[in-house]
Length: 373
Image 1 (cartoon, rainbow, N blue to C red):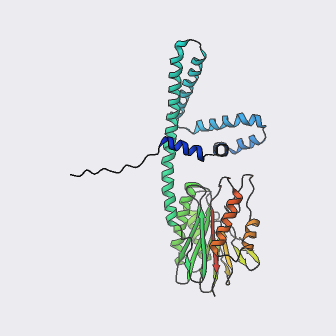
Image 2: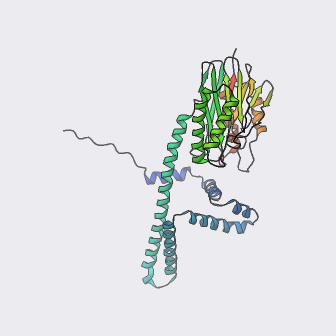
Image 3: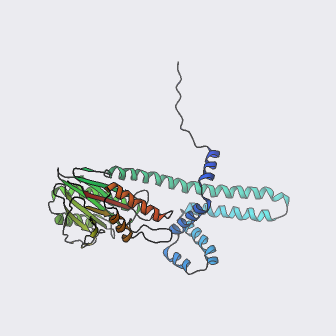
């Protein structure tokens, strides 16, 4: 008779984890970064403006107080009461420790223990909520990843590279590639207003709507009008989305373009860069807006660069923007590279410029290059 044992997953070891943390953590940089994130999340814009007018000494004391106050009001009622009880026990422990009577030593230890226990209980509850939300966001990100197109779609005579990176667990940037016929392809690059889960859900809806409508329309003008009507009807108030949709004829090099409030794509020709006009508002802003398509023909060696505002608006620690001028200079000097090489070069310049600064917005790029001979 054989006995089968179920394999147990190895739990992390506390001592090893502590050693790894000591080796990997950069105390000054990490604490400074965490503190900046606390201020960014908990302080209102008015509080941030007040801090700019204050001296360093006053800021040093007021900032933690405002953060703790904001944190307190974000707790649930029962957790606020538990926190107050923990503070009461902590004050009693301080009071009892200041008395000289040796008989109160047990009281001091008892109050300190219950105070620490209540604080740990609140931390455990908050961590549980965070981990639960993070699990759901990770599942949402997995769905978004499954809907993303291949990085290098294969189209005869064309060199295409596509890239998107969300600022958070899920993003509101749209990137899609469709094969409509043997010679006709569709590319979508969009940016839903806002961040987080609401923007991500609206982005998925926009993507599915585009895929459902495009095959039924030969005119991008009519397609844009219908898409805008649906977006106005179904989206939440004050939410909108910019969009660049490309109808690409792989045989002739003709690109029909619908631009709804998006950053104009850049045409990379020999020795110069042209920017298309942005004539129409984003989807969801004007109910009966009438869109018109634009047309561009890419000759062999020429490319179209489509991107979201997360690229030029990438910021470093000083708050400086990467900017369109720096982007155009990179594209102009390296137009001989393949689409993937050029895209990865732009990405490396952005990452180098940004450094350890926080990522504030999603970033999306698509490069379409004609290599027909």
